[in-house]
Length: 100
Image (cartoon, rainbow, N blue to C red; front, side, top):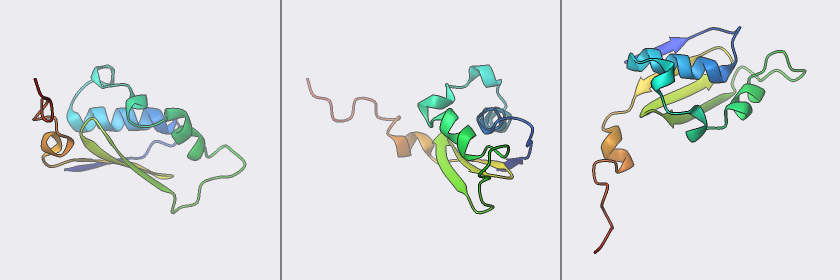
């Protein structure tokens, strides 16, 4: 399932948290802080349409947040679930590589 959200009046970092919370059917306050995945100030700065240098239409940032793939463009925030996110991140084997 992929969700796209377009709300140009809010900062991109708030858009991202809201979009991921909606996608996961959770409250934004229940998510990990966005800065654990990406620098919110950098995202806001990159996509600040009130700045003198507006990002080009093709500017795109993709990263993982809350086991979702998030793609940010000037026009939208797309969120999709990552198949087997726990396996891909190694979260299903917390003691892997540890020895007594």
